[in-house]
Amino acid sequence: MRHLGFASVVLSGCIVACGSDSTLDPPSASTSQNASLNAPGSLRASPVSPTEVDLAWQPSSTQENGFQVYRSTTGASGAYTLLASLAATARSYADVGLAGSTEYCYEVRSWRTTGKITTYSSYAGPMCAMTPAPPPPPIASPSGVSAVPVRDDYEAPYNSGVQVNWADNSTNEDGFRIDQASSAAGPWTHVTTSPANSTSVHWYGVREQQVCFRVTAVNSSSASNPSAAACTTPPANPTNLAARPTDHGIDLAWSDNSAVEDGYRVSRADASGIWTDVAALPANATSYVDEAVFANVTYIYRIQALKDGGSSNYSNQAVGVIPTDRPATPLDAAATYWADNEYGWLHFDAWWTDASTNEEGFRLESSSDGVSGWMTLAATPANAPYFSAKYDLFLFATAPFSVCHRVIAFNAAGDSDPSNVVCTGWGEAPGNLVATTVDQQSIDLSWTDTARFEKGYLVLRSTSLDGMWEVAGAVAANATNHRDTGLASGREYWYIVSVEYDLYSVYDPFNYSYASATTLSP
Image 1 (cartoon, helix red, strand yellow):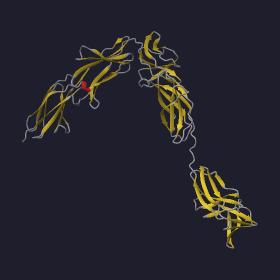
Image 2 (cartoon, helix red, strand yellow; image 1 turned 30 degrees about the vertical axis):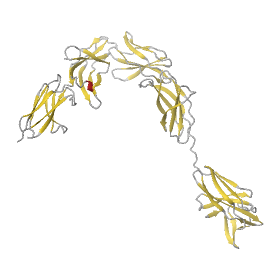
Image 3 (spheres, rainbow, N blue to C red; image 1 turned 135 degrees about the vertical axis):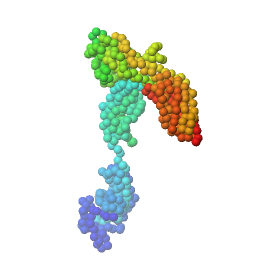
Image 4 (cartoon, rainbow, N blue to C red; image 1 turned 180 degrees about the horizontal axis):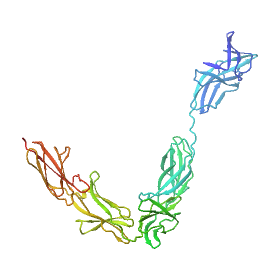
């Protein structure tokens, strides 16, 4: 190993210093290493912090005038540099200002000056120590926490959302812990977490009940102080919204269900479907007159209670129109049934073209024959020219039916003329399917026509019941037979006959029949 701090030459069997490059060496005309001056004993190096290593030793004689401490940062066999020159009474030394997670090695020797001669002992050591890793920097607390009610369509009791926002002031967090309480004084309950660098989270509150939040930045080893608390009370949404045309506009009225709201917001949509805020009202308001409207234009309204810069859920929607004439007739009505075998639902969809601008809504009617006995199946709001429903598929599996539909638009001035009539059905599989061999290349199919409003029948063919099916023919409505030709002789063929309606071809276990036959051999 190499020691820096003085230069030496061999003189009379001793190492004699010719000069010193350290101001910590005691001044002398010459130096030597004397075997009679013993090296310090019991040298220890103890890391006490990421920036400090403490040394301790015991003197081996009473003749020394002091001690010298050398340090290496390149391992036990590296280059040593004089670190300190201490008095004879020294028994320890604190090496400070170090780097964490770093190895430091030490050697210590004693020295004595007699006249102009300085004598040194041999070195004690080396003794090495690794400083511990420095602790992570402290985590800065989030600030600017706010809690704002937002619309949320979940079921009660979590029927009002709360948006919690904050400023991320730390650079070393793993995430954030969000605590909730009923007051700013607590007690606090941990409810959710948010990832690093996030600044918001959506949580839930109960209408008309105060809820408070605080946010803490955390990592694997520590946590910040909690932020200041932010509280809000989600307001209850208005209900029973109604719109009534008058000679000066459309009058709105609703029920105020909140005791904490800051005010109300009135929103309106026209035929474009785009919602626009038309009024901001004070707390406890229960009515509003919309005068910026035109005759024969349908408007849809909804109301929200406001609180702390946020809002409640929507009220119900209400339609307002000032009609001078009854609505125009809906056009291009269409309807279909379709089965979702995977989930067990029978779906019904109906749709049409809205040709009016002043309807309050639409009435979907049904009849068994499309001529008489019309009954209301459903009503839809203005500007909503469609209706969907679903039924338990297996409850309808043994109940085939045929239904006709029409649509009527309505307003305060009266009903429109009915739309076109559309008839469709489901579950009317052809009955008594029989496959009969004709010759070496032909098989006749016959069945009972059970459907009333079918478009036709589709014939599928395969060489095995679980094989690949291909279309063998399409026949017109009310047909009861089909001849399949061009077949291979002496082969069995399987057939499916499925009913097709105007808009949808049904392929499911409840709407087809199958049979097989074998062509004659040569």
